[in-house]
Image (cartoon, rainbow, N blue to C red; front, side):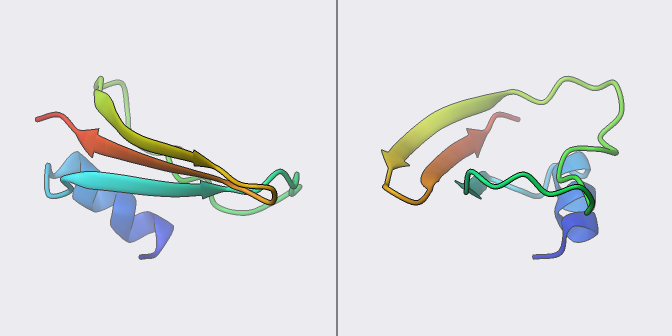
Length: 64
């Protein structure tokens, strides 16, 4: 899912879960996943965290 689509769905309350695969590499540019969400508070509940050698896999439930 493209970043813009994910942001719009999150703001519209259409997402039930978010999965993030975090790789420890710093990039100087790119689109930020949570950049244009505004001042509203969106609460996430941790479902699962898996720590691998190359990445951390994060899974959250979006609380509505």
